[in-house]
Length: 135
Image 1 (cartoon, helix red, strand yellow):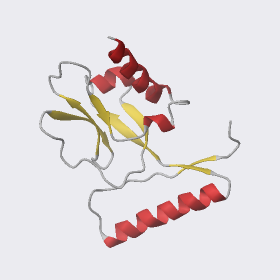
Image 2 (cartoon, helix red, strand yellow):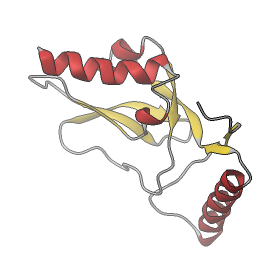
Image 3 (tube, helix red, strand yellow):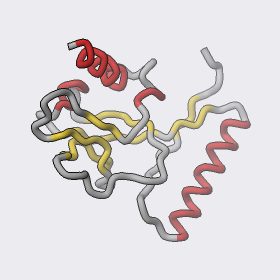
Image 4 (cartoon, one colour):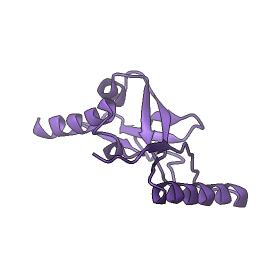
């Protein structure tokens, strides 16, 4: 187990950004790198609101999920047949399901592997995938 302190850097990225926003993202990245070099553990996390009744809601067992996300791109409009089932506070689509799928179909825009060891909700995403594959 690492003894490095965990430091959360809340962040939000968009598909298109102004030069000012880009500078903020670059600055946030530089800050994360500096925190790591100084012995800290940068971890960009933010809350995600989950749509009630969705597959994700059933897996999560909660209306809000903590997502580890550090992307510079995002889904602006889900593809044909996909339904957005989770959003960040700024409206960014964070998860999608395939409407009327014959099997298990769930896509998330964050990195559940980052926190699955300590976050039961993100761990359940992997458990549900394995269970679906077994069936």
